Length: 212
Image (cartoon, rainbow, N blue to C red):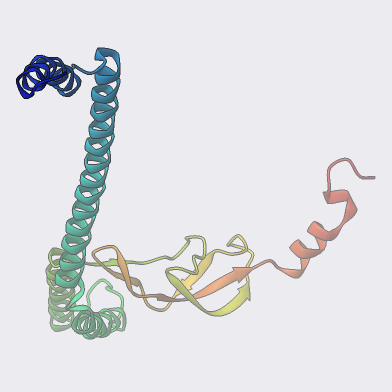
């Protein structure tokens, strides 16, 4: 017969074994290979995030540099071309002065001294005025004899000419004006075109090499 004392003894002897088995199950170390793989995967994930953040930062920095350069360019353009309307009015005065000088009689021997002084005064004023405009970015170009350029010239007429190649400016009523390199006012010009004889020669088969 099993007594109460024997039952207690049996329970006492079995308890350490179960306790040890439970403790061993909770404290057993994980597989080192699995732990290393998990750590490697985590490192790769973090490196990918760092590369993504770096790429975003570089893109953002490039955008900021472009924005600063664009803003500076806009400010410079506004500063340089804010006086464009005023500059157009100024060149009108310069053209009137040039017309006044051109209307004076050509210098001849024995001319009246007053006329000589008047001409010299007008010419000196014109040079001074053009120099002031040049220092402020306004340039003047007389296109006589140059090829016609639709970006800088406005053709007022086209005339046949034996002395100028077709498409050449044979007469300029006004010069080309620019402000810091940008067109301010186009030149009013007359463009040469080929004469009838030249057109006939160009159309003739004999003028084409290799044709009888």
